Length: 232
Image (cartoon, rainbow, N blue to C red; front, side, top):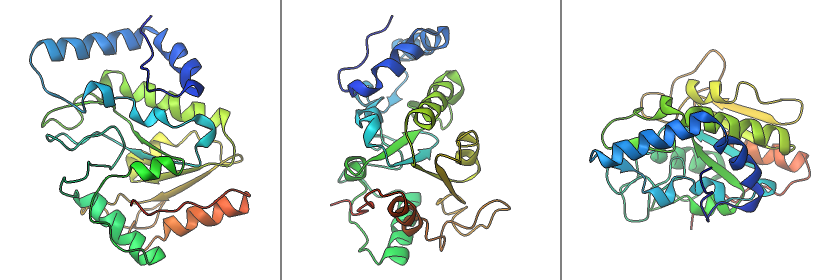
């Protein structure tokens, strides 16, 4: 049995114990250890692999699903779409800020660190929690996607009246089994430059979707506090 990282909130411990007991997690960690032993650079740093799980399960009001951590040096920090202060804001996050400004009139932030969103009860989950440097998608099918889909199902079962903000077809698939009698899934296209203006058959284009005000309207109807989307 692998030890649960000390930064994981105790409310997630049973989930981790259940997943760690399954053979696929042993295979995943063996793969990652081999990659590191062979000199492969992996992002983010090991201490940040499970950073999203520092958020107590009971505090989750919203889950935002990404795909991979950033695969360039100094960008990935264990939270989907987020980069440390001082790093250049990636294109998708620039479009996220653009929609926040259009939707809610917010000033455009000068940095890309979304840690404050986590403090607001936003579970910033990537489908893969690691990636090889310069190789997008390299770890997704090594076991991480099974783990993170199980985490989404755990939220689905254990929480109530939460929002799943699904940007793009990949995120739509990740949220496909969410019980929409208990929760809501808000779908748009992906905020990347290639997808932000694209209308989908099952979802509006990200830019102009007003998904952020939509999230807060749902939360208010459920008697929950709305989200303060500022990052400062």
